[in-house]
Length: 47
Image (cartoon, rainbow, N blue to C red):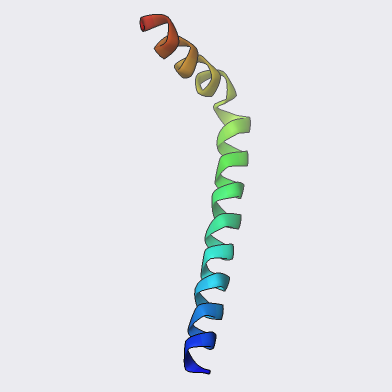
């Protein structure tokens, strides 16, 4: 039973981390959309 509770705690922590990452990605995407899209295209052109 102890192992199960530890796994549940890990899952909850992972879910929290994922939601935080999603919020960061959303704010980053909305604020830096131009730079976010320009960087990959520049890298492709340099090849």
